[in-house]
Amino acid sequence: MNHSRLSSIKRKADDLAKLSMNQHLRLAVTGLSGAGKTAFITSLVNQLLMGAENHQLPLWQLAREHRFLGAKRIPQPHLHLASFDYQGGIDALQSQPPCWPSPTHGVSEIRLKLRYTPQSLFWRKLNHSATLNLDIVDYPGEWLLDLPLLNMNYAQWCEHIALSLKDSRKAQLAEHWQSLAQQLDIQQSANELQIADIAKAYTEYLHQCKRELGMHHIQPGRFVLPGELAGAPVLAFFPISPALAAAKTNNKDSTLTLLNQRFEYYKEHVVKQFYQQHFVKFDRQIVLVDCLTPLNSGHDSFSDMQLAVNQILHSFNYGQSGILRRLFSPNIDKLLFAATKADHVTPEQHSHLVSLLSEVVAEGKRHVKFEGINTSTVALASIKATQTGKAQLNGESINALKGILQSDANNQQPTTLFPGEVPSSLPKQNFWQQQGFEFSPFQPPQANPYSALPHIRIDQAIEFLLGDKFK
Image 1: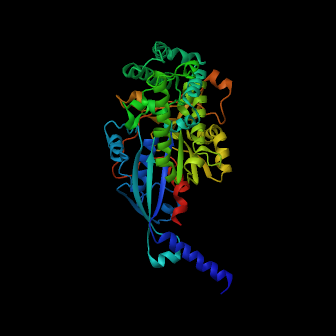
Image 2: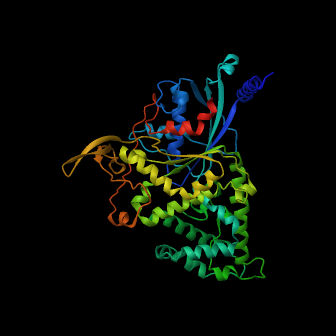
Image 3: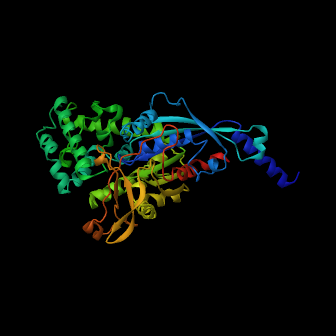
């Protein structure tokens, strides 16, 4: 038998092996708080559940070729995880007035069974359809920022926090918890109530950094998004001065001993366990990034967002020397970077948004691509909240956005505005001095229960993340 005949038989056998059973794919949806993870998953699930007929997914090859037969929700595989509240998100969008789905604060999961007609003629002769079980996992991106803690001891972490307080604005916000911590005699036996109070004050400081300074790089991440650990003693620790943290103690019941123990416990049983439970199982990943809100907030907020996003990408260090490679061996082979809220800028700005995001993630993306991971970048809107219109500026007609601003939700009157130009590269100093960009959050549209949610490029995201599984 000649070589080409053998190759043909092998290809058919591979097709049969691949399609004779249900395929499984586990998608990780990653992003910092406010990036739009809940809206993205709600829209993605909605497009798949509604997309077999009258679909709005022309960039998804399977749907365009009418080979997508439909999707349905089935029981999730991990019973210990919270179920993603898809129906709650849809109910919020169908309310009067409509509102955005409530963000999740922990790990959640949803499983869909997708049925389709394979491209392979060989398989169609045996069975006209095949299935893909898609698990979609949502979790706070802030939790990934704790990975560097695995390389620190308690004294080193205290030094790291002390260096961050060289920022005078942070130092001012830190005054309360620092004054409480300075009253401690760390060599004396620990007072649990006092330690809990100081940890609470430190947690409020972290929330203030997010709320008042627009900061994203917050450690430990579970302090601001505790999930199931809310109120647990493992979150009752805080940094002290580096000199005190490096001191020795002979009292096994001392405050210093307890702080060291809780820091080590947090690393081992919270940070490491989170990676072990989830990251070995992911096949594909989308990283959602809101570039617009930090542009509004200023240079420090934008730089902090860039630092946090690239720190998240370091969590997916696939190199042989990387922490995750040594501990967990992740299997992600496709990674999509998505600039969210593309409907909050005019269409001609979308290419600028993609270029800006590409520079934001450039450091982490270089390493990911070097390790052979297939990557792409897109600007999308999970749920399109605006329409494109026209406005007059200095006597000239320009593209503008029309929608109901969040601030106008009570009177429900649409507004037409031009938010300004998105920089196509990392902003220079003159951008922050002029601040010619003003991003305004819009109310979502009223959802129609009989049609899919309006979106921008969700189909492009589906094609990149899933398209190769439907051959």
